[in-house]
Length: 502
Image (cartoon, rainbow, N blue to C red; front, side, top):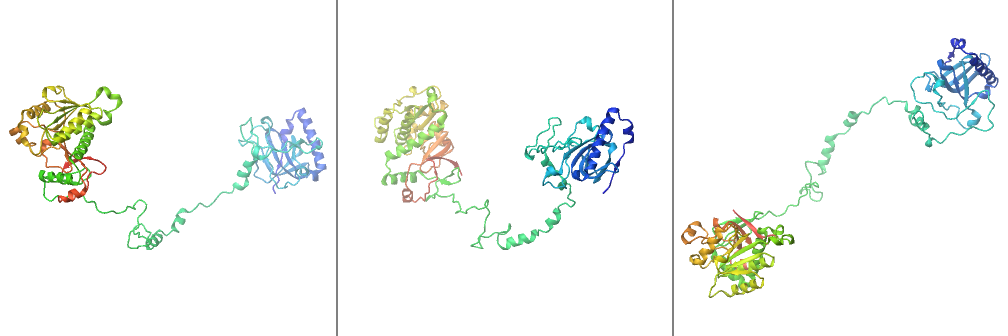
């Protein structure tokens, strides 16, 4: 144990009379302390040695009456732990002495408990080093006062440590538990990451995984070693290869088309197409049923070309689209009349052009009767057609079996009006003949279509047909097989699909 004798001879010469009286009073109290030295050992005291020496706190370890000295164990100087384990004071250097804790009051407290610093006013401490505020556990009584008749007030629980309003610091004894002596021991050795990483044999682990079939380069299924095992993002079920040629015809029709999904749709000759429709009637697909399906598909395509829901909605009642139907006295004309009836039912203004004929087919007469009940407008002269451009023209003038109709005056007048109206043209079931430019120059002006709608299977149409579409008229697969066609539907979820030249 190191004993430090604190001397303050200069301070003694500069003490005022008032300070001398205080010092004599402290010395008197110190004599009483020396008289009962054994009773005060282990007490926690605070000693004020003036502005020069400062304030010391600690546990009384020894009191020497003969030399008038007092020793403190584990001392604090101005709130900072001293580097020496014990400090000895002379009675002449002590300006004030306060008892912070008495062993009899502490009861079961350990005598080796470290002394806690206390907070003193700044004018008593004088110029001190920058440090954290000193914590006061209990306010003691002066040495010359009598022993308290009751134990001092207990400190509040550590959890509810009060906040100091003057310095803004926290009086938290729990900080001593966290940042006390136990945390002063620094970790001299750092964690060796490289050494610990060297303990992991990566190559051996991966080789073991590959032997069990779970490696990244070779994975097999547990039940079948020959079958590969995939990860969660590689588990793709292999299906059958895609067959794009699902339709085969007995003879080449002169052209091939393909759908948006890549399926090949071959064209057929008119003779094979006519035979296909005749066999379908033998299987129950009558002409009236085929006209109805064709009218619905053509109407749906026309509504899409007119703008669909953007054009046909309750807010655009004042902008109803206008469609002109150009029909002839044949089955193709009946298909156009059926389409016009469905368009009229969808609030489209339909104008039907059909010349007055003495004799017409029964199917066409029946469709005209139904068209009249849909409040559609029918005209027989070119002069009754609109002069201004309309929204859409549907061409059903041509016939597969009678190409000489193109020489008729009403046909020439209707085709000339359609080409001059500058409205887009949709042709329903157009024939192969009469669509080329050479034949059009020889036989008269033909209607140049922007879209053409074929039924069941397409014909080898020319460039004048525009963009080709195909509609499903509901023919069963047995009907196709009866005429030697291997058929799988290319329509998918639609009834009308576009076709592209292969």
